[in-house]
Length: 178
Image (cartoon, rainbow, N blue to C red; front, side, top):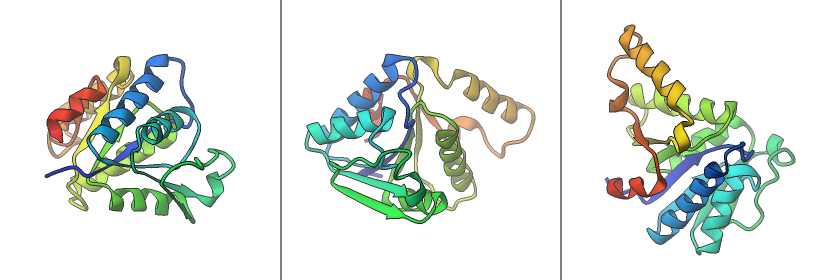
């Protein structure tokens, strides 16, 4: 499967490690160079903003999907190719999934984790079969991945974790899957 559009879920804050924003910027540069459309949450702040800014700077195609309730909170990015304003978080996630061929998760908070686990759940239930990548910048997701393996070890998953998730440590590792 050729990836032409990538959903990226990440923080509307930058976090404490400068590598998070650096990796977002590098991912934006890579996606632009590979002519892959970015589908994301539409925000202009934090890691989301760094990613979108890099795409714009390198002439990439960026589609943002933001619910009305977050227009003020996440401060929608006004320079992206297209901004879709939707009614709810549920519609946002569905639209992002529908527009993308695969998904990548960068560091983020509760919203990012919600998006990751919904995407995983839908994948497991065969609602979609899109590749899911986690960019584990500086080991950000190490503990979560350990917990996922604990779920597997204790019989709560239907298949091994690595069947549904590909872990990357640097954005350029995505190239081998494109």
